[in-house]
Image 1 (spheres, helix red, strand yellow):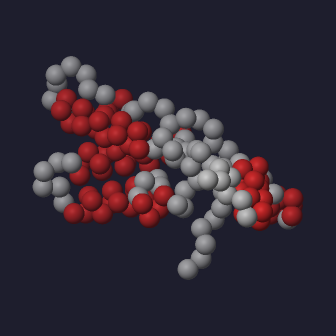
Image 2 (cartoon, rainbow, N blue to C red; image 1 turned 60 degrees about the horizontal axis):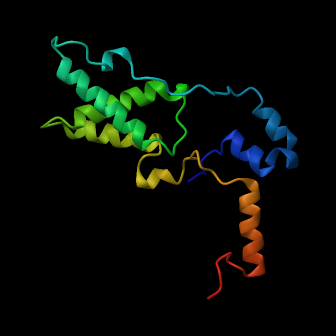
Length: 151
């Protein structure tokens, strides 16, 4: 099985483009997404007491729950449609008698967002270690020191 493609930002941090400039040029036209996820879609926000208010409240709750779960994962405006679909699947899965196909799709979407235990290690989070932190850890390992106080 092949390896997962590393992000351009990760390769830049590790100096891969210094070693192989052509690799960086091949990725020079990649789109750069910097926008935040943004607020929930308008059809998720309950208004008044019209028919569907309860469903909209469930959609909004699912959106908020996913937002809370993705605090450590970088989710941007480019992920908005995927995030919205995941929220809809989450709301459907909470309904009594939801079909197993909804759970299967939800599991796949959660994996793609890095929200499953197995997929969490494959996603770069917001709190990624800096190069200096990694170098310090390697130096400590080479010196035999752990950085912990000796008792």
